[in-house]
Image 1 (spheres, rainbow, N blue to C red):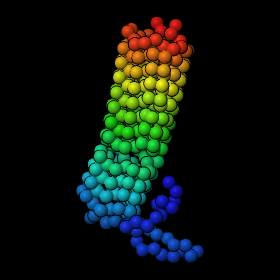
Image 2: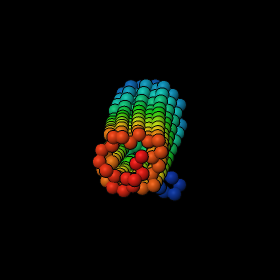
Image 3: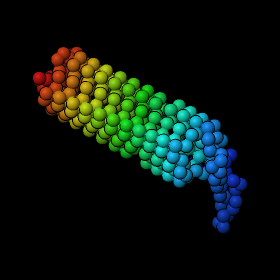
Amino acid sequence: MGDDFWNGYHVGYIPARFSGGGEVERQKRKPNRSEFGPGAKLCSTDMSGEFLVGMYLVEADLSYTDLRGANLQNANLTGADLRGANLQNANLTGANLQDADLTNTNLQDADLTNTNLKGADLAGRKLENLNFVGSDLRHANLSHANLQGANLRGANLQSAKLSPASTVAKADFSSANLAWARLQGANLNNTNFQNANLTHAYLQGANLQHANLTGANLTGANLQHANLTGANLQHANLQHANLTGANLQHANLTGAATHPVVGHPGFGAVSIP
């Protein structure tokens, strides 16, 4: 978002003043810590760099608030209004953001390790290279999101929606739970799914070229017309997976459990042991 967005007039700004160059400057006020708490009205305030570890901010109004670099480790933000808030470089490790409104929230370079984002609506968001290690993203909406290079090791994405058209190339989903996740048509090129749980995942038409699926559990997964060219499927479990029309050219299936599978791959069927 551009600077104009953050400099727009909101309730929490102090009155405007004129700079030496004649330009109007607006500053967000610094709230008193006595204002912090459940249901707090902190709209458009300046909380950048604040130490808010373990803070109880359930259903607080933090819309358009400047939280850049704030330490919100283990904070409870359940149901909080974070629309338009700036959380760039914020520490959200272990924070609870379930049911929080994250519309247009800036999460650039935020640390989301072990964060509760269950059911979060992050559709269309720029989340590249973010740290989601161990986070709870069950039922989250990540459609059209850019997760390129993101770290989601051990994250729980059960039934999460990453389609249509999510970009997940080069992300790390090793040991993550993606059971029943929707990844149809997603760009998963060079993505790491080592030891991930992809049981019953929807992967129709997904681009899995050169993906690392070593030891992944793909039992019952739908891989119809998926592109698995050059993918590493060593010791993966593909039992009952639907491979109709899938491209398995140059895929490594050494030690993979492939019987029974559903359908016939479109290319590279000779590779199936």
